[in-house]
Length: 243
Ligand SMILES: *Cc1c(COP(=O)(O)O)cnc(C)c1O
Image (tube, rainbow, N blue to C red; front, side):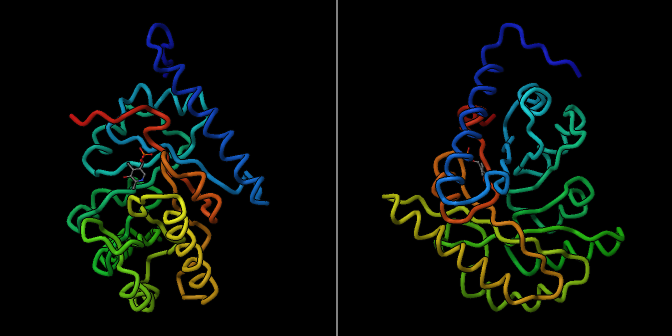
């Protein structure tokens, strides 16, 4: 598909935003003694018009996108140029929608309960595939957020590791809104510790290599504390307009 770059200034803004973010990622990784290539950038495309998503993919090298809602993704996907692009679901998933979304995405980052993990595994068994997932941790213990509670989570790992068709690739989190950077970094650092603790334990069906944390407002802090996948939406595409 040829994208028309003509009059709409937003195409150029998106290109520029991506340059700035990639530069930030590189500098932050290097200053932390890490290889910038180890940090992946996901473009979060919820509410974004397909023409802008296609621009990011075709002209700016975006190769990983994240969507929150099953229905929204399914209605957009046929208009997207997704060749060579990895698609992840990052929003809360109801068990009754597992069947619809599983064949459509490469990873579900938002596995927030044992029940959902079991439903995904059961559906993957039917399809004869192995489903890659991340476990979402509610690191701030907030009532308003989905994700495994920190303590319940550790206890669920054994059961999750017994589910036959899951490949658990790591962890995902959205930290609470913090008053200051110090507090925010404390949450990221806790996540990094969990990640390493679980990685060392060698659970069956676990193949830990992804720590997904950091969004538009805090991806630098997240990278500083070991994130290797940042999920950035509004800093690329501008403020979201919910219809
Ligand atoms: C919307 C969303 C993002 C991106 O948020 P921005 O602040 O716009 O970068 C990242 N992760 C999840 C799970 C989201 O729902």
